[in-house]
Amino acid sequence: MEKAMMGKHVVPEIDWVIDSGCTNHMTKHAGVFLEGTYKRLPSDERQIRTATAELVSAAGIGTVRIRIWSPSQGSQTILLQEVLHIPSAGSTNLISVSQLTVKVINISFKSDIPEVFRDGILIAIAKKFDRLYTILTDASVTDEGLLILLKDLTLTTLWH
Image 1 (cartoon, rainbow, N blue to C red):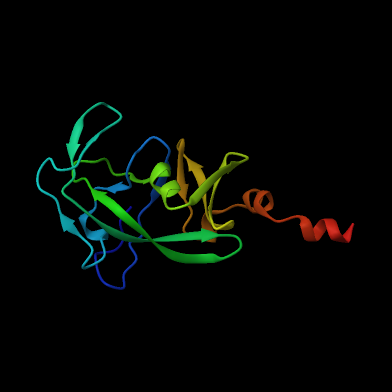
Image 2: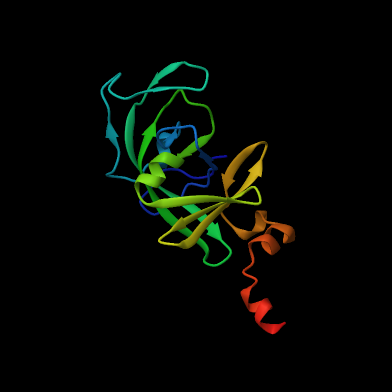
């Protein structure tokens, strides 16, 4: 759900889904791009084939600031670059696994929970909602079972 408008210092509160099948980060929301980063694209310059085999055109490309959360670092924001603006796309905003790996960001599935690492440091996690892995934006959507799964048990082991 979109709760914010475009602005220099505004972080849009919309869901982002990790998708191993998409080749590019994409959103239909024009208002999420940071000012000065959005570049309009000529019609049909960048086309994407959807899961239903439909060919859709990107209207533009730019950078988006998204909110992420991890148990070790709490809430923070990161820049997601080269995000395609696809006005005819569905309401789900997609983060491309292949586009992340080009930036040396790794994703690991641990107990069906995707963990996102940069330089070996856990920077974000996702949780499964309706068969989609949605990036967590704050601790309020976690449950105790998830936190226990993600907790580093090395300190506990030292005590025993």
